[in-house]
Amino acid sequence: MKKTAIRTSIGVFVGAVVLCAGAASAQQSAFQPAPPPLQLQQPVQAQPAQAAPAPAPQQQAAQAQTAPPPPPPKGTAPQQQDAAPAQGEAAVPAGGAGVAAKKPAAPKSGVLDAASSMRLGVELSAEALAAAPYLYYNNGKSPGVGRVAPPKDRYVYQRFDNVVVKPIESMLPFKMGDTVDVLKYIKRLKVGGQRTCLVARAARGVVLGFAGKNAVVKLTDVWDKVIGSERVVQSTPFIPVYIDNKKASGTADIRASVILHLDVTVAPTMHQYIILDKGSEAGVEIGDFFRVTDRKRPNYFSEELVEAQVLNVTPKASTLVLQKVYRERLKYGDEARLSFRAAPKK
Image (cartoon, rainbow, N blue to C red; front, side):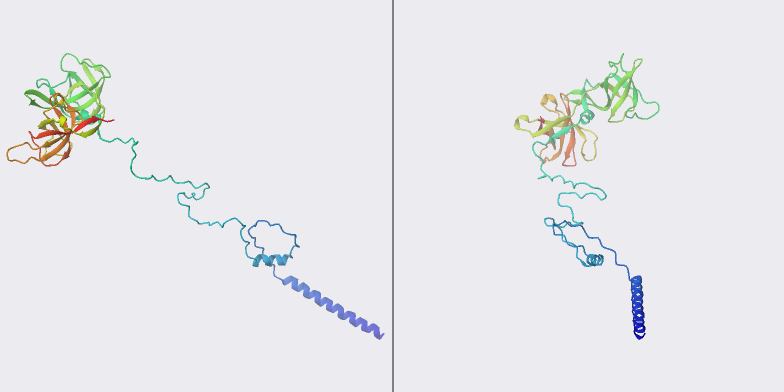
């Protein structure tokens, strides 16, 4: 009886202890904080190794938090994200993929080689040759077979206008499609005892057709004012001239005198025209350079005044344009001498 009571008390005590332990275990599991999330690490190159038992989940989480990142594989250098592009390469544009393009190599020097196609010497354009005034030799008469009729609704004609050309004599010797020059009269003068007429091309045009005896001409080039009464002649073709200028030798000694200075100003300026009293009969050629000095007088020092280039040549005279001005004077009778000889460009 007494032994039975003791066993009963021991069983009750053991049961109470078991219940308390279960309650404590349940309370601990209910309030235990969740483990932190796993941090992914950069993949590394797999190395052959012996299989090892997988660690417990809690140990794996702890290792992921405390373990340092693995070293890069052997044989590869670390890449810098913000590295500047190498010299001679262009950076890849943002937002696009591609391969950096190499810049073209810089030239070795700034000197042009001998095989360059760049022209040297002097170029005379067709417009410059056509617009130069010249002397017309015909006993002082003006050239031309037709005359431009004055405009009815304007003061001057413009480029691409249609003008009416009336014949001076019976009929015009033109046909449809011909190119004609419109000449303006400047003045008359004597050269070497002959009466001449100084004229210049004011415009150029193409014959569109005929209205009775009159021709209708469309102006394609205009160099000066066209107001009517200008003379019309068959066109003279001009092409650009490329020349080298070589210093004149003793065998090409041409001397002339200034007989006219066009567009006279207080002092000579660039691109004005002068006329010399020597032409093709004396050996003057288009492209030649002449230096003009003061006319020689007793007890007077002659100075170099200007340098000019030939644009038009007639048998007894030549037209030059001023290219260099050294003194602020130029007058009738000043002496000109060939300085540079024109030679065809090779």
